[in-house]
Length: 432
Image 1: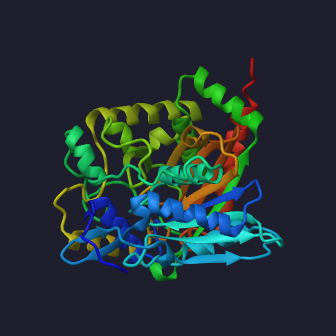
Image 2: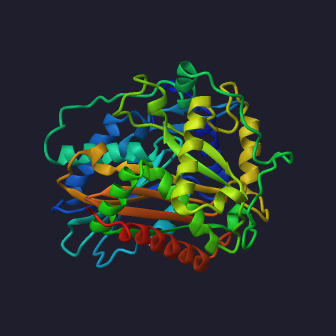
Image 3: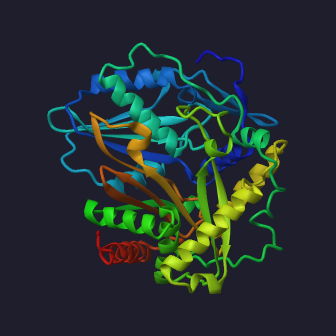
């Protein structure tokens, strides 16, 4: 590997994600699966992946740490670990997510790895990317799929440059917004938020990141979207309210909770971050919900969540521990160790990420027709994380959790309750 000059220093959130991955058994690694719907050979796919690698800077990234962490973007495509699983007669998402997600990326060498699943004829069925969330977020993963699809259609073969983020997301936001002081660290004993108990406490080395997905049929999804429109409530707020109400099925449920909502920082930075950039541009809003709040009916709770989100945006209350441009690496390391440590509670509450309509990012795809995305939850921060999006008119709901902090039985019960709630509200709303 030819060493080059460092690209830039990691932002605080990027540095935390790196430490969580290394100290909490692959935590926050982003696992992305997408399914081929046209005949693609492995060689053709690899040619497309090499094109992506050369086009997008952060795919060539790795991390070096001294007194602080720096990005180097000098990794060749041949240095990317690639696995080919041949004659895959059936695809088990839960098993493959668990297997791939719990293999820790060597971030000092590369920032992603590739797995290709083929049928008995050698044609590609599924493709899986495991990427560092410090380098690439979920929105960026969709841009990669879009660019790969365009390459396979012969539309982008001569386009080798792409926009870059030459500053961290926090620096971009700070240049446009006057940020509030950082919130109390999650491990500060003065923090009064009620922490939900885990089912079984374990150090990160004994945890396992797990995921389950479910689909909401197009007819029900259409009903749901019409309901949101006519009630003037954003779909994210309704998804979040359902996430809270469904949590009553968990043995760890407490009527007081936090709700963490990832948001696309591009909307906070006006035109500073290009819409097609591949990088880490996600920040979060954290809401506190009282027992009175969580006792509300679904739509009332959704309206309250929407009101709280708007208030946070007006107040510029964004959370990124520790939210400082001049962070010290030792602070990040201490925070990551806290997440990895054995404790009898979850540091944060439920996490809900609504991506929106996938085709809004990718346009219509020709070679791929379905995909799944989730971050590895071995940091043990949340009882449940939900990623939801619309794809081809269906609603896709991907749930992430961490065993044994939450048991598989409890997770399945939560998923069942969530999908029953959203089906009920969708079924109960007749399209006029």
